[in-house]
Image (cartoon, rainbow, N blue to C red; front, side, top):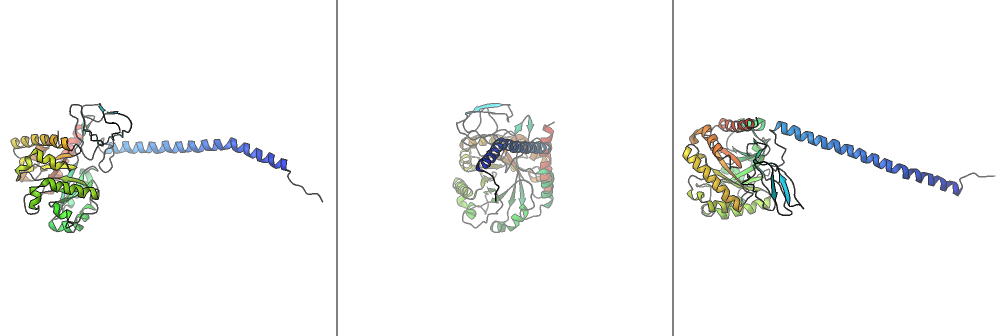
Length: 375
């Protein structure tokens, strides 16, 4: 009986034909897959670009920022970089080799004579771009001991921005139990969160309990009973200790010293030493804003202080606290102080009690001034 089957030669021929077809078709399949990936990539880039354009249309021509950081460029191997975001126009700067170029949270340091601050990491730009003045970042202060729902609603709806901050002013019991602070933060939809303490000792010894959601610690030393005497006597040591604490916990560190009762706060050298350890240093100038002479004197002092601080710590944001209450001269005086300091201040806040409506009017005025500058 005869059996039929493939011979060895026939099998080798079939295998050879399959190999030839595979050699021809596999590159075609590979190219098709690559084309599909390219098409998907182009589509993704287009969607991202459309998202950026739509964002800028909704947010006064400001590009999207994450956690308050405006990314410009990272410089790795080159020594020259052209930066077009400045009030003087395009600037070409010589930078150290390997410098990383980015803007810090908030309104960056302005150009002065074509020079820019470089500290091995950040290069700063002006908050004016294409002749459009953007409102500097604002710190909204919410007292934990009162209802602020009206102000929070206005903030979430139209007043706040993602690069702003919201801090909760605690009552003494809130330092030891942040439950009430966290409840307030859960209502906020715009900005990063900050925690205020008048006592470095309470923070360092664990008597004050840090809220879990904060990104900033604000030290608010004051001349009354809540700040220990040794911290009043040596604010540099207190600032250094809190800087170390913030570094360990991944926080930014800011100070808002009260100026009126403490004349030595007007010592530029002392303030620069304290601000060496700060990411932000804000002058509480609301007590001076009512009188025009005092207001101009404080604006000049802020300029001198910013220059002194930036020599020691170019990354530190220097700002100003306004006051909207009638005892400070009300909204008119607050706006006057804002106008007097807007050329140098990189960040603002306002103390507004007892009326929420006053700080709402202030923010509406600042945002309205920003929109008017675009026209």
